Length: 159
Image (cartoon, rainbow, N blue to C red; front, side, top):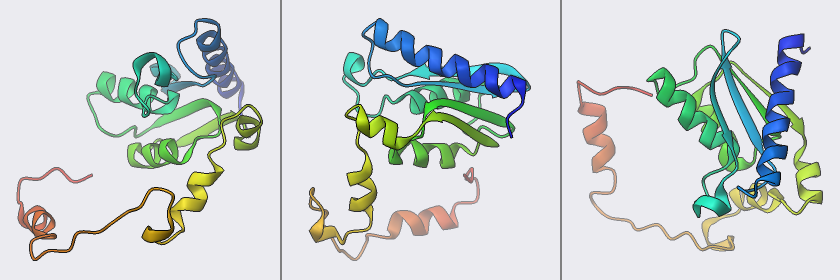
C-alpha cells in the first residue's frame, strides 16, 4: 500500500522521465531515491547523451545517492522509478539494498515503446554456448586466486 508521500515521489520520477524525453537527454526513464522523506539522489536515463549503456535512470540515481550518502549501500532508502527495472538495474538495486522499490510503468509498457528487455531474462537461463553473445570460460590453475586472497584478507570491507 502506498502512502501520500510515496505517491508524491513516484510522480516526481514520472515527471523526471517526461522531462528527459522533452530535453532529448535520453530515454523515458526517471528515478528518485529518498531517505527520511528527503530526496538524496535522482537520475534520468542518459544512455544516448552520455554514450554509456549503463546510464539507466536507476543506476544514475543509485550512483548519485551513494555519493551523497558516502556509502555504497542505500540502507533505509526508498527507490521510486518511472518504470519496472530492467535486469541490469534490478541487479544494481539488489546490490544497493534499498528498503523498497516503487515503480510506475511495467516492463510490458516499456516493451510496447520499443524497450524490450525480455530477451535478457531469457539469455540468463541459457547455457554459455547458447547465448546470442558467446560466453567462454577460461580455465586455469589460478582462476580462483583472487577469491582466495579476498577470503584471507583481514582488512576488507564486506558488501
